[in-house]
Image 1 (cartoon, each protein chain N blue to C red):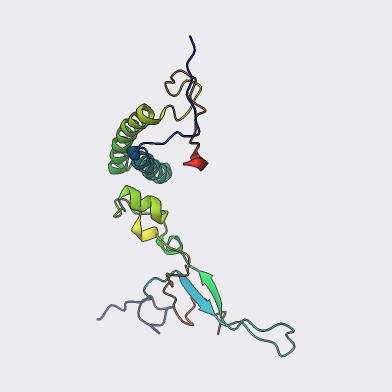
Image 2: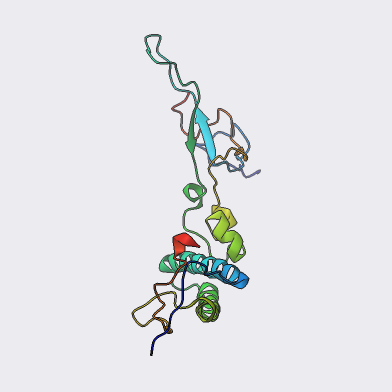
Length: 100
Length: 94
């Protein structure tokens, strides 16, 4: 019998997401909102949220690059968006159901 | 006996900057490994790497002190005459 890749309570809507550091959601916009609405809100999801207890012997950056990047392990590297370096951002996806 | 040295035109040798950057890089890696080992005390590879880097750091530091004078005072580094632990460049002046 084919072993289902997802546990039963997780319906296989989309393939497993490639990790992204930034995700977005669309807040409710009220007609009485005095300020211009923010249609898309962005939130940061660094790798440590998904990593749990760090496994030993992860690959490492060389010392100078580690200093430049701010972490010793590529698996934990999560840069903020820079002017010259747009960060890959996943569209309307969101882990929770809040944005539906 | 008296000895003088002026500070304004003090120009650091080229290798000072390389050594300083290397020391900073080693310090950062040691810091990361330290934090990692706090939660993974039995990771032998990390402990070995940590000790290798400590050995390397001591060598880099000795070289740097020989070039640019003491990095810290209160007995952590040798000094020369005139008393030079407070010489320029300070970290923010480098």
